[in-house]
Image (cartoon, rainbow over all chains, first blue to last red):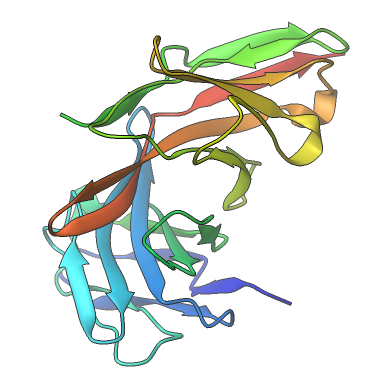
Amino acid sequence: EAQVTQNPRYLITVTGKKLTVTCSQNMNHEYMSWYRQDPGLGLRQIYYSMNVEVTDKGDVPEGYKVSRKEKRNFPLILESPSPNQTSLYFCASSLSEGGVTGELFFGEGSRLTVL
Amino acid sequence: AQSVAQPEDQVNVAEGNPLTVKCTYSVSGNPYLFWYVQYPNRGLQFLLKYITGDNLVKGSYGFEAEFNKSQTSFHLKKPSALVSDSALYFCAVRVVSYNTDKLIFGTGTRLQVFP
């Protein structure tokens, strides 16, 4: 089954404790992206990757890191989480032939709470 | 600035009645437009897209959207609403520049269909 898998789905952590949210897709997609969803703000892009070893900042990259060492995985790293990073996070992927003109496939989301 | 707007936070409609969820956009060049739906505790799912061609685009679950260049709008429509259509709907537009190619999402519109 074609899917984007995120883990963990739910996490409560404390300020400053490093954490990683994993994202994996099995569709051989080139394009992958991380979004955060906050009430009244919709989805905002954190980082994206057009292909392996190519990553770029989105609209709200502060406090986050990513890596794309292999095509299927695109982990999101919070080196020192803060309460303002409490949010619902989504990973998405797309074929990206000729740019992001195709549909994005989303994971189920990871709800993160930073105390 | 390139952007997409969803002017209504919530739309209420009775089952069996037609529904419209509004979206307007602001981009340079020809727009690539998308609609996504989010059911509770799930990731976003692709509904339909406009790239070029007919102004009326048909998508999943009986939804359609009308592209209007003069009004810079891409409203989502369905002739007869179902209770199961109740969800959060997001409009998105592709933004392309020399160093980026991504989707920007609106803030979302919650559709409530009453029996």
